[in-house]
Length: 140
Image (cartoon, rainbow, N blue to C red):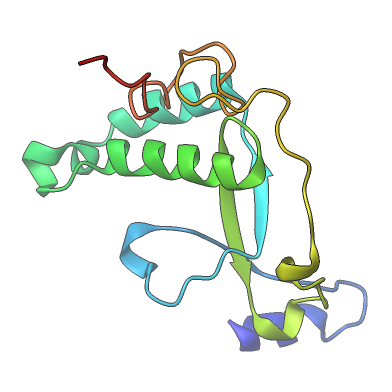
């Protein structure tokens, strides 16, 4: 990859600031989310429809439920980014810019912090993350 960056920048006209690596199951070890990007629900639905066309994404064929895994990642990364859905990318350390230390940042609490349907992550209580969202505690 570094050679490709060098060759892309040799003539001085084109420059490559960073190569972004999307999070994926096969290369999960060592992956560190560097940037989060919000995803609109209709785009996630289009991705899911396209991915379903490939047989390897189906658990009976591959032995792993890729669709469920990546929809789950969209939900988890969305929660981290304070959006209903998001994905993350990493970049080469040489392309990273200095960042503020997360332990020095403070964030305001969401306007409504009740979990489950109607939570900050999914105000409608529907969508791809609804099945994974915790519901109200059952009364005994």
